[in-house]
Image 1: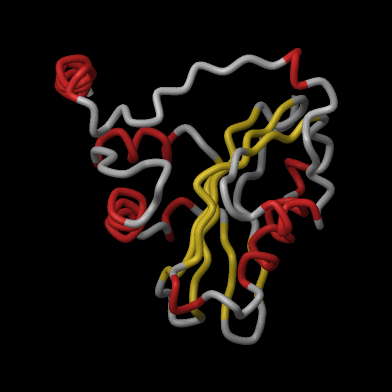
Image 2: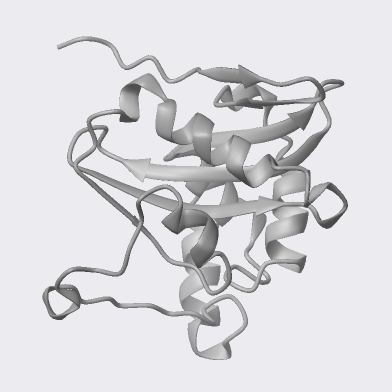
Length: 167
């Protein structure tokens, strides 16, 4: 077996994308995810940190190192990859950064042979279709268990509190 080389970077004139976990601005990511995203509103910081630790994460940065976007991949590096939590801050949208991020993720040397990519989105179908994503061939073969309001729903409060105490 060969060691997985996770750190990969791609540079442009004013921005760069990096999979170096040491560059991630975790407070920035948490603030955006908890307060701006529709899919992870109110996510506790400890849960977000756990997702980052167990994923291949990509930050989008200005050349001075200020983070302006993010995306992560949950993968075994061979058969499956789930692309999730992709965002560019509003003030940096319209500059091609989503495409730059996607180009970098899909060109990552450790992700080139992934057989099945999955993602879920409410808004960006056009972007992802440009990269070969399409509707599931056989959606009847896929099932999901999704607790979309888990971080806001009192039904899960005790479960989350106990879990967070154990972290």
